Image (cartoon, rainbow, N blue to C red):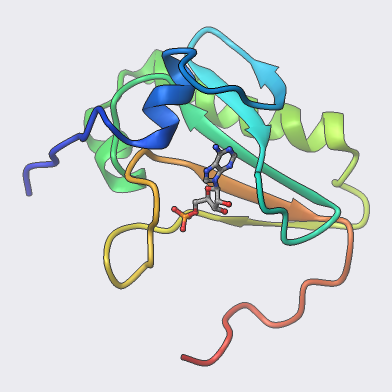
Amino acid sequence: MAFTYDDANIFAKILRGEIPNDTVLETAHSLAFRDIQPQAPCHVLVIPKGKYVSFDHFAQEASEMEIVDYIRAVGKVCELEGVSEDGFRLISNAGRDGVQEVPHLHVHIIAGRPLGRMLAKG
Ligand code: AMP
């Protein structure tokens, strides 16, 4: 499928410096910042700087440099946040059924309390 990126999404505005963010890590191709409505003591979003809508879009069209940078950034945030020992959850919502609110690829790193089962009902 063809992916269409919307430059007006809120993470694009963050990347353009139009709205502030609580940065955890910035690399050449990625940015990690705290979620504005944290669901747990640690809730960090990691986004690529490139214009990718979702994980599958990124996997299909990003360069190897962007992909390596992004995956390493996720690992670095886990290290910086100290979540590796007690554990964490990585979530990347995509599209309508995935209930993706912001159409710019992001993974949620959620940690700091027991997180329960993987999916809630409904
Ligand atoms: P989703 O697209 O459903 O995976 O989730 C989008 C996430 O972005 C939600 O957890 C929001 O709380 C978060 N969010 C929305 N706007 C901001 C913002 N300006 N800064 C940080 N997080 C945000």
